[in-house]
Image (cartoon, rainbow, N blue to C red; front, side):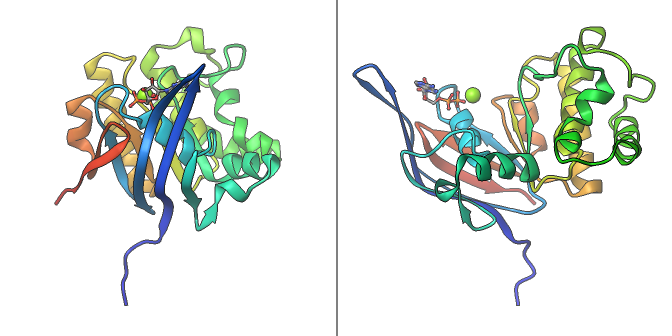
Length: 233
Ligand SMILES: Nc1ncnc2c1ncn2[C@@H]1O[C@H](COP(=O)(O)OP(=O)(O)O)[C@@H](O)[C@H]1O
Ligand SMILES: [Mg+2]
């Protein structure tokens, strides 16, 4: 009997071709990938290699031109729009390069967003989110708006928002691209600890070698295909 954690994300020969007027732009050219619960994985590769496209397809924000994208064994192509948005809400955490917080909401209100959409009662949301914000290093900043926080602090709010509902997998597209290297290091330490202590599965894209060094698995892409898949230690 194998004790390996279950495969939660699977891409099978995924192709993605964007149309730009008359021109076909191939973004993914037959990408295969399996991700298991608990992984801390970096998707690397030069700009234009398809990292963002791959994350968007895994997260159900975009659809393959051909091939299959499966989340817990379910083919996303077979889902209706409403099934897909429910799948995103309940199973996927998103962290973006530009934080994407709602500017008029406080750190607390941003972080509780998904729980609110899921219909969790206010007192339960408060209990979870106050603890979580403290855990990501933002105790006392619950009432600040994004403009009153540094980039690193905003990204901590975004990470809290992404993991508050304990999604199946958290996708982070170049999460450290907009912060200085010391802040990037602290954000990586935070994500690593959340992976260890809360078993948060992370798939993040990066082309920062220091970020890659922290990943336990590195999947390297060139021209829309996986060229290397290295599991460390
Ligand atoms: N919406 C789009 N329309 C047309 N081409 C796109 C679109 N999104 C991405 N591409 C193209 O697809 C390729 C892969 O892009 P992307 O997934 O953003 O790569 P990465 O995140 O690794 O930089 C690039 O050639 C890019 O120009
Ligand atoms: Mg990108």
